[in-house]
Length: 340
Image (cartoon, rainbow, N blue to C red; front, side, top):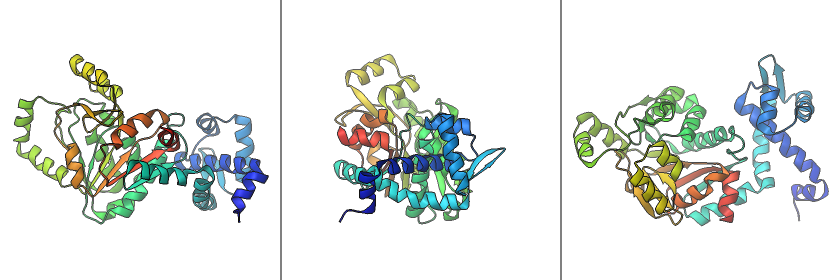
């Protein structure tokens, strides 16, 4: 017998569309509260007239409150949103997407959040929230967590809850990163994660890429050697997946290496490795820190990347990813990955 939702989708399709729209509004308010109507309208791509009508309805239902600072969820609004999440995942087919991708990639788990972070930047916060939920479940206490840099990792840091610090965590940069945009450096992100959760962190002030001679010199330094030991012994790794050319340009890659990446048709980057669509390594940067081979012995490897434009990069890297990987991505990337 068909479920009530299946019948509703056939008999009253407008009802499902309205529910999806209101769910998205509540979801955005939760992430950005307190938030103004104009900001909400721009981010969700709704006219102010339509949004005014919807928020008035949500206010009448006591799901949101409106103040001079903006709109926020009420306690009942939070409860409704929590209850709607599993229903909406079934309606939109996200649960099925997760199963398809997990089997296709041969990894431990895939978590898909609604939306497309290319179109709605706030979806990155949803990726961060999803990652935080799984971290809470996986961490046992006295854990060391190695973290890479990047804007997605910075979004994860913002969403970590304070009570995660009760597990006595230590955040360490997965590799060097001096020379990158400061706010997206692994050192800064680790410090933010530690601050958000009341945990400890270590800094790792070494260049992102070095020559062989400098590599040997750096690794002989006692402090560098100590932090490297912490990185290699981490029980969890949090990392992003980058577009190859974007990352190469960000690193100010030398012309010869850039040509090598382009001639090799590199589409993805992670941990200083550049991959083509088949997942083959076309170039590797000499970095001090976590190497691709090290991931095989780490219990929890969390890859966080979203946006429909990232699908090709995610697909390429996942051909090399260890089986212990949990991928956190968004609907925009997931739908492209299934079709690819």
